Length: 221
Image 1 (cartoon, one colour):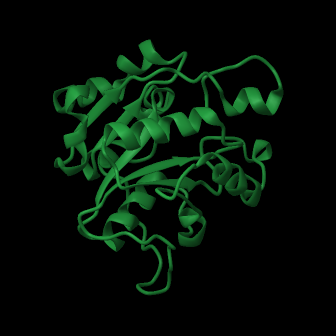
Image 2: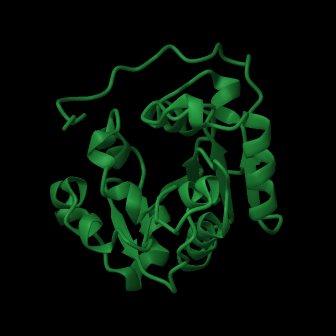
């Protein structure tokens, strides 16, 4: 099993200043959820995560960051980016939901680099990283996962089939002392990282894997 926690992830140079237009209209003071994924395809389970976070964290925006290619997944199973962007737009309902190809524009592959760039480009915005509980269960395998936890608050939204594993995940254990009660989730966006919470809501069992294969429902993205 691979772990990325032995020190900070190396920082890439990133795009030249002024060379990138991210298409995001964000103002200082806004509370913005960042929701990354392959969305291969997007489905109502993804919408459940985004909408639960929007409501429980009192967010102004949720940005769906459609990955050009998840480094931990097989590229041969990924639909073209344009198709996945269109799929995400179908499920990102309402003007406060924004679908973005920022990672493709910026030329980054790792979430930690994406988040560093967005924080640098939008000073004063209160960002929160959003993920389903299925991702928390494997979060310790992500490059720079401890850097992500220290960069911005994190909200984990319960997904079917991963409730027990995610609550006992290495990331949850490592940062147990920084977890805030779900009843105080509205405070999360303005807290200093590390800070995270675990939110439960009526569960949506849809998964991209099940949709692609046409088989039984599994709680994976």
